[in-house]
Image 1: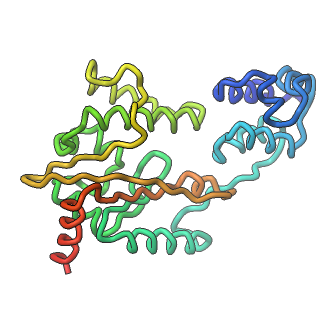
Image 2: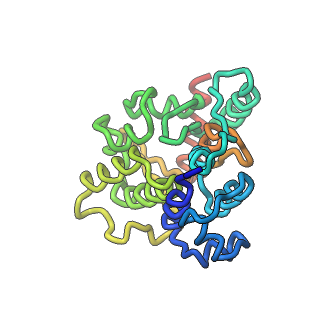
Image 3: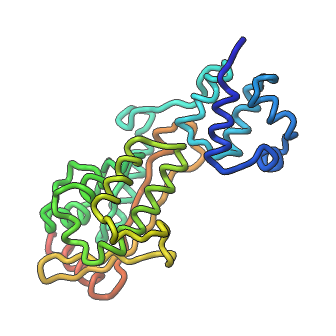
Length: 258
């Protein structure tokens, strides 16, 4: 039976910038076997496909494609978040976001669509005159005016580019991320750092809302060990005050809203 596993394996190996020898060492598989798999001279077992996919950090959503290319059935599923099976996940999301009040928190899917927000996040978007039914990419790169509220946008854009590139590379190339990367380059032009990588590990987002100046840091959490690739792509982004003035503002915002 002819399969297309070899070219797919080579594509992912190249995407991870690994030689056949590099992959063989990381996967504890002989380089000769890797060569035979890529050339089609050997057919992998289902276990070998999964092992190599894990070694190459292939996203769960793309592992089924590797399995199909080798002639095997799908292993990974994608349950709708509204399904009964995902009820514990919805509860965990809501619990996390609610407990993060009085600071903003969002649940995002692979392409940064907003799945759920806590009350503080919704109030923050409202204060900036932003809709709550767009993706974060649309808000940041579209014409909603959010960029005008980011006082240090030129600095933030470098971090945004690095994150988009990292997530795009992880997925082995994604049309939405690639389009967003180009859109960001078009917006920034010569202002965008030529290194594409920030020099500092983290940058505070400085928001100007009328006379207010808010400074926030963010963290991103994901669900681990999930065979459901929709769940594996789900992320929770939580924002924290970077100074006392921002902390006092959000705490007061929650008090005012009660």
